[in-house]
Length: 272
Image (cartoon, rainbow, N blue to C red; front, top):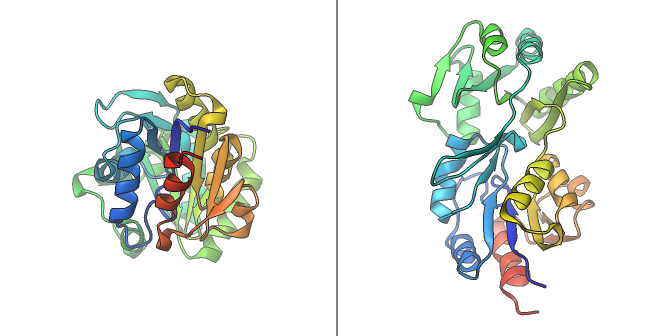
């Protein structure tokens, strides 16, 4: 069959920890677009962080960012969808995370707000890349700022056992008021309740007038599961944990083996 929309997770799917997109993946994405397929990113990254990678890939369709809280066009900058966290709930969550000594980052008005530029944030930068300094600000009372100006999402970064502990603690406290996902073993993320990459992908597919069965989604982490399950064809990377792979219709080669390029050749460009 002919697939018309391809949604790609970014970290661990399109690129590895070196944050480099290989020539093979770029060429495959270009070929898919030249053949008439829509290609988008579906990432936990904020728009400013995702945009340079979308530009490297030459993407022309709206990007799903911030775990599905934002859908925005990379060329026109038009916002198709945006749902921030409730301010009061975001403030409470930030306060709890700060009290636990966790590095907290709030995405507010397209900028990253931090409490202090310390080793915790430096570790985040080493793992996820350095944002433009103009897009980062220090707010000693980040919780109150979030209350007044609701963030698109809140992130917390730390060693895997700490992130796992805080996700469990937050899930028990905010199960009926926040969306809580782990996008990496070192990163937990909070969004408005009910948001997911799957829900955002459904919204984008409707916007592009693409049927569900004509959509492919590819990902590698727990936050990708909703879109793998929603898409007509959900593909898990070979580097994805078993807990993610079991929700996919097939497992493809790992990011180190250019799994995205393989999948595009196999499922999008193949005449079969």
